[in-house]
Image (cartoon, rainbow, N blue to C red; front, side, top):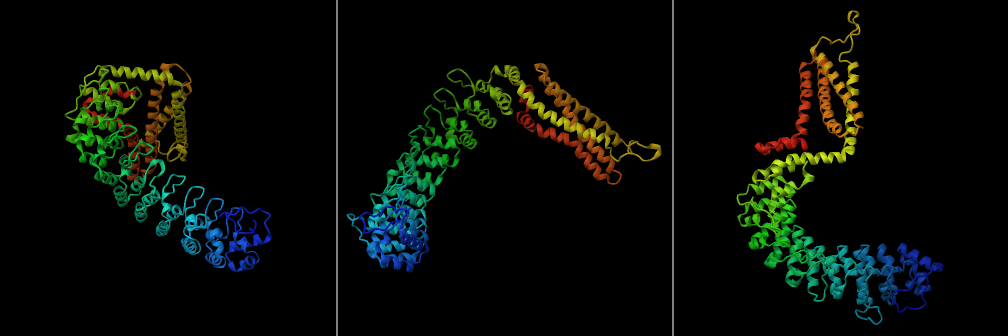
Length: 599
């Protein structure tokens, strides 16, 4: 820190070197404590010490503003009024004035005191000396933020209005984040500040990504501000952002129905305006996102706008199917005015049904195929029909949804694929198995061998830890106590079957190292059957073992346990095959059982 011999012409004194005199160190220690009475002797000895700055270029008023020392600040400008303009105009290493420091603290009382002192000790317009009130207010920090930005950021709405009354030019500054004061005010919902900014003809209204204050007003959900902006600056309704969207399209993307309604009241021709970047009409944009309420609003405004197509002739139903928006698809299917979209082909001659066939979504296909106006005989410009498109989705052949989709399509649309597909699927899956046989078998073997070893361990231990234990009667020494009971005999048989089945699986897992294709393809089927037998037998052995022990004293509990253990394998099978059972139920007589082994 260093002392200034005379008042400098610059509003920002230089950085004080670290080899500062002792009195400067004492002065800044007193500033930090906020006790002005301890500074009087130092100031009397050297009045210019008030203009000194620390290594961060903070002067005494910066420190007072940051730490909220009101009495210290009052002492400064009452004892040295001639130095107040220099102190208030001084900027630290971040480009902040004491007023900015107070607003960032945030300390509204200190900020108000600084404005009052500045109005009293500084001329309003003395730019030549650089000490005016306007000059102080218009200063920006290294992020290009002025005091108006900081006032709004910290919620000081009334103080921001006071700043605008003193200096309207604060409304022009745009930060490094491309935020204008109007954008910031609308984003935070400060309607009074927005109203005042709109009264200033040169105030800026831009925001990040070329999004104006109107976009920010939509985000804040303040319909009053939106209407204010549309009334005073109607050109904002047509401003395009960096993504090529105008405010109406942005409102659709944000699913903001209130904003959509306000903009349509302002100009209902928005329903006909296509995206500047992608050429997408508004109704298609709503269909892509699945925003049903907005789609209905557009439909009710200008019904013919819903027939507009995209760059490749695709309509809203094409896009809804591509994005699998079932609400939009059902709305189009049940609205008579929109039935034209069902058989409207794109520039490749493809109806929406073609896209639905590629998606293999049974719900979408049912909605279209059951519609009375759906043309199921159409072909595209390459001569293929929807069944051909579904058949081409080879990656989905092993899925239930493809099975159901292909069955629905082939039942309505005549095609040779209906009779050839089963063999094609089998051959394709076999080819895939040949290519992936090692990786698939290794993964399957690891899981199967682990479960088989666990079951073998459990059942083996159960064979030598019999229910009820062994008899101690000399005539039957060493024999099981319940050996003559039927439940016990069932336990022994079930336990034996479970152990033998699981040991067989464990042995087959060792043979899985063979690379013979026929063996490996049969290996999974065999081990699956044996594991199922082991599972059923283990559950039954557990139930009969407990029944044997519990039944003599508590028959109903023993029966309950036995019934649950008996039906558990059946429940497991139903749960495991539930999707397949649902598919069989939905298709009814159309169910193709030949496809099931391929899934």
